[in-house]
Length: 161
Image (cartoon, rainbow, N blue to C red; front, side, top):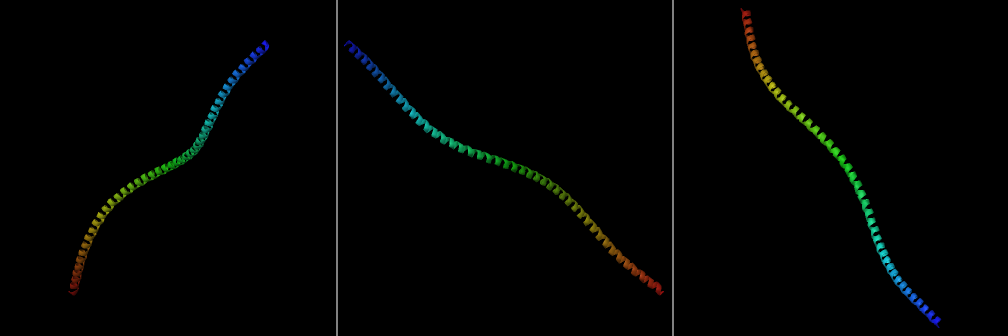
């Protein structure tokens, strides 16, 4: 009987150990289940976060494409602007040249007007002198006609004597 008691004690000890081990394993299972639940929640959270990041990544890709397009357009506008600047510079140079030519032409016109005024005065003086000569010519022609008449009358008188 001692042996049975000893065996019973041993079995009780084994049963206690098994119960303790069972409790320990049950506690370990609960800890692992909690860890598993926490990991599943973390996976769910990370999956959601991953979805949000992928959505954000797509938005950024779209934004990058738009920015590249805008940059290309900006570069084209810059090139167009440079072309317009060169055209503007050429037009300004042409305008300056035209202005210089206009000033020179105005100066020549002014000088021509001065010369024209001078020549008009000369013409007027020459016309006055011509008129005087015509008047003198007419007077001389009258004197000549009168003298010719006197000469003819004198020749008739000499011829009649």
